[in-house]
Amino acid sequence: MRVLALANQKGGVGKTTTAINLGTALAAIGETVLIIDLDPQGNASTGLGIERRNRKLSTYDVMVGTEPLRAVLQATIVPRLSIAPSTLDLLGVELEIASRRDRAHCLKAAVQALRQEQKERPEAERFTYVLIDCPPSLNLLTMNAMTAANSVLVPLQCEFFALEGLSQLLATVDQVRTNLNPALTIHGIVLTMFDSRNSLASQVVADVRGFMGDKVYQTVIPRNVRVSEAPSHGKPVLLYDLKCSGSQAYLKLASEVIQRERVFRAAASLESEAS
Ligand code: ADP
Ligand code: MG
Image 1 (tube, rainbow, N blue to C red):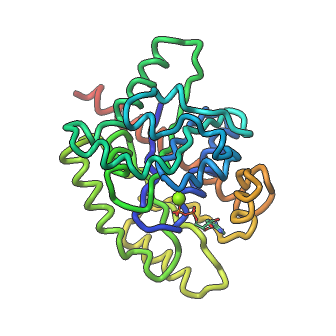
Image 2 (image 1 turned 180 degrees about the vertical axis):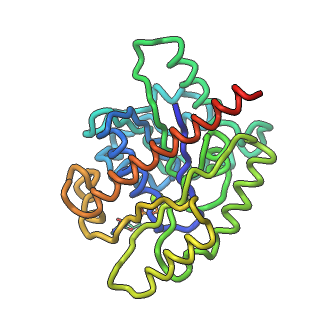
């Protein structure tokens, strides 16, 4: 089970859209996926058709430790894709856990319990990917996500200020690696909302590739109106319009993510054989 935190402290860069549609694309190619909605806004939950009145249990209960992940998750309209929904209660969670010594490890504890359960109960649904949709802030919720994760996936909008804030995000990942989660890696950076009619957009792509090299996925997600329409129908864009450029891009991204995982795993097993 691989855990990826989708993080960027900027709002509106495509974190939630990527969580929903990368999750759907991974499920479409055979993975079993859990999205953990860790944003109090709950856009990932809404975008996957989980109405607020049906969110009796949520990631709030998981964070305060009263429910295991397994108890709060819900199936979605996408086969092999489940979600742990969020509610506005999450807004208060920081205050509630702030004084705990293990405040950055609440989500990690829940993820580890799920991992353990998958080992012990072969009949339980086995998730191969967990995607955590983070809030637009480097707060305690995002810290929890990065502490629970194997890797961070950074959605970056193709706009003039794309690189602004990226160094702060990378510094935060370094901090988490030093203090909370030594094995944390950056999985990759995905450029989103690319608009070919905007002459600046190609320059931004070149700049980000120049700065981050092959950490940037080859796949660039185009700006596509179908992508932004889909959530209001409570559907991922892959179900709303499979043929559109946005859906096709998320399918490509999913195979790139899996390919990178293979490379990571091969490197790790070579390392352990060598030692
Ligand atoms: P974040 O979670 O980082 O705040 P969202 O995923 O909610 O960002 O995206 C912000 C807005 O941009 C949403 O209205 C979403 O529908 C829209 N959007 C995201 N990706 C695309 C895209 N590829 N094409 C068009 N609109 C998009
Ligand atoms: Mg969001």
